[in-house]
Image (cartoon, rainbow, N blue to C red; front, side, top):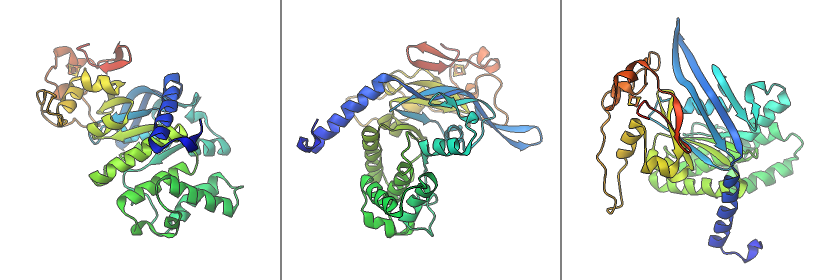
Length: 342
Ligand code: SF4
């Protein structure tokens, strides 16, 4: 197809269509199996940040991971990137157990392939470095044979891709707005030509007006480059907007996982039902369902409940819930839930 003859909208439609083909292939990029990550916090005391979760992410999709603050979602993001070592379980990237990636060259290749965009673009950028130097840092490590001219050309190109000017390369982080700094965070991640990016609350520190621009940019880059995202957020309505499939986390566990539409139209887990009932409905034609108020606090991950982690707050709680942890199982096609009701 000749792109020069297409207008912007046609070009975007073309990209979207090509991207849909990639999604339809359902190639597994990341596979997490019974992952646990505990942090030792005292003698014989472990904080069970992630306590046995399993999921797959397919090439080209955006997998949303939602849950309240402290539920373990950021720990999942950091563990799949090897920033943390898992306590137990496996993470496979392109079929390879990431624990088994040992030699320096392979580790470097994995780190280039799997990148992260952080929540706070300001604290993740060194204030003493220019934007150009920040982006170049990764190029120096991962592409040692690139000449200085090639690096400068690449930095200018990356700045343009994320909607900035090459001149921004000479500026310092404090000279940019929050939205511009997040664009730099994205350019830095893209510099290493990754396949997979963990986006850890990438827009929650930004003004609402800027959030949509960054989401649109992430979408565009995904279609254009075939990127796969793990999109971490506490904001369910934002995750709904951007994700293909969504996993809901509670106290270190995945409690529900399905595609975007099913999760919002037919949530099965009582915790997901409560979260969704709290999303404001803008469309007046949609009947607002009863708001489910969550009582009580999230239990401590140092001393989690014996049975279902959600039992102390669940209005459907039964006797079995207090003693037996529900299995995470597929109760309908592509719809997984951990609850004794199913
Ligand atoms: Fe509620 Fe029991 Fe289901 Fe847990 S297993 S969510 S306590 S009904």
